[in-house]
Length: 89
Image (cartoon, rainbow, N blue to C red; front, side, top):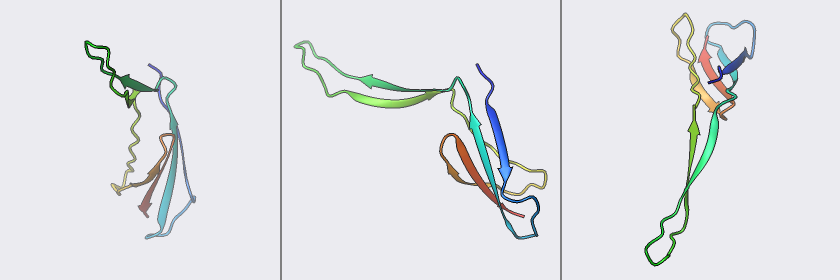
């Protein structure tokens, strides 16, 4: 399995106490595999059900953010490739 990649950037270089901090995290994994499974049922007479599809991901990614002060980072958004977190300085 491939090793996930990640880059991150903050919206500023310095903050005053109480300022909102925004952290943008871009991440990927070359061997993550989104798939769709299709299921259909056929009886003995050859009657077919309407196919049903189920999306799945093999080797999904999870993003976790911590810092050495113990503050809480809250996920604002996550597209599956870019996540934005916020915290208070």
